[in-house]
Length: 310
Picture 1 (tube, rainbow, N blue to C red):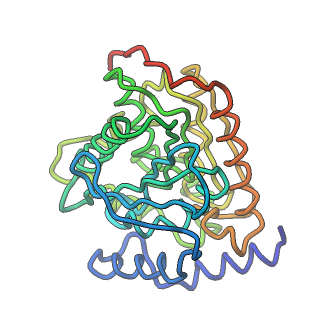
Picture 2: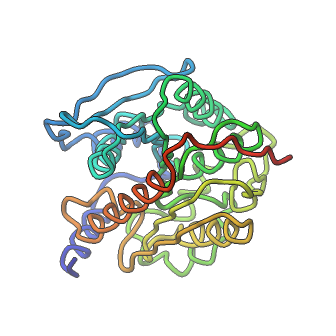
């Protein structure tokens, strides 16, 4: 973990042509190219499937008998990214936790605004529960972190079996983009801006009549009682820092077991750079320890939650 590594990744992100808030026709293929530029390790075995009518990408580590399933939700501001593009990060998590991966190809805005993406995630999760007896851990990055929490809230309210835990990396939790870190971290964040968030939130909520403060889209305002243990990771150099801390405070106030893990000097979803960034590698090791703790906490299937009216 060195200053040189952090500076290298920061400059890499500043020089990258990708713009989260830019023209989707340009940015979608650009992001996909960036995410899939490096081939997956040869022992990562991938396949395409569907769960509940929703396309998913699966990944396993060759020679490893999975002890559980990582249900992963990719980022991209609700409007970009893909299940396959997220497999680099998700398969790294799978390797460290001894799990397999199901990454969800949820529908993207603005073609499919809220609640289409969340509906897809919900349908795929429920179908996964019907198809496996293995414990499930939900993970999500950025907008995927938002959908991960909203999935947990929906599952709790419906009385469906909860996952053992959730891992949230740089989650978007307040779609008003009102956190003080949007200003205080604007010069430090190498590639995310308040305007970019506003653009993508506009796509997600366009024509729905849903306010950014609605707890169904901004989990920082939701009733989080009854959720499983959460691990929230973020970097101190990202404008979404307050989104992570606000969610942790709300979860703690709602009696949820939550760990807030902030790494200094790094930016949005820095774990994706674990191969070249010591902080990213160490953060994923902490995720693995958290997952191990949750899977070892009890061997029996997850208990049915008590539904909370919402």
